Image 1 (cartoon, rainbow, N blue to C red):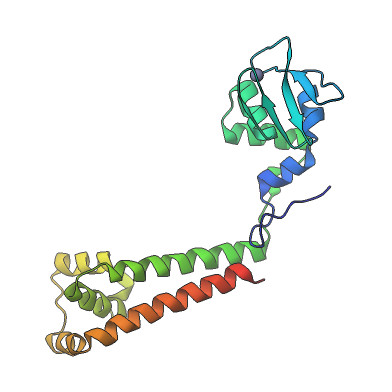
Image 2 (image 1 turned 90 degrees about the vertical axis):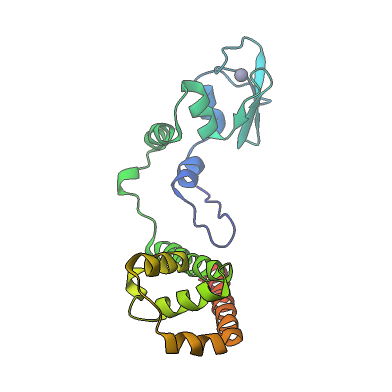
Length: 204
Ligand SMILES: [Zn+2]
């Protein structure tokens, strides 16, 4: 069995694992005989002519009903299944126990890390869209004891309105004076998170 790795980041997921265990031609032949050139009568639209062609034992296309794709697309089209049901059906056929399938720990950690970094990047990108006053307020809230209560700068600003938390006037003025520095800090944070994300995506 050969597992295809999609890019450097993706480990083969469950769909890929199942797909790679199934011989497409043999699977389609369960429903309609396939000739030596990879042609079959399409069992999806119940054609009598050889309208379905299999390419490289990897994909198929029907010139009658204009459907095509991989073995998942075939199983879904044939019995009008949703993806989940097709996954269960094909896993059973391929002998893959989906209930004991767990992504490997390193993949799990990596996905988690990417999600976390993406969330940080979103957060700081969002800050850049706020007005200057909102930026100062959001920075203050996100850097202070209110940090735990809010997840995004918008939430931070909303939260302050809602609970009537007002930024410490002195700190506000301090921030205001340093508005350019605050902006630079935000951009630096963004850049830092983006670099971290790139490193995680490239590495491991
Ligand atoms: Zn067809």
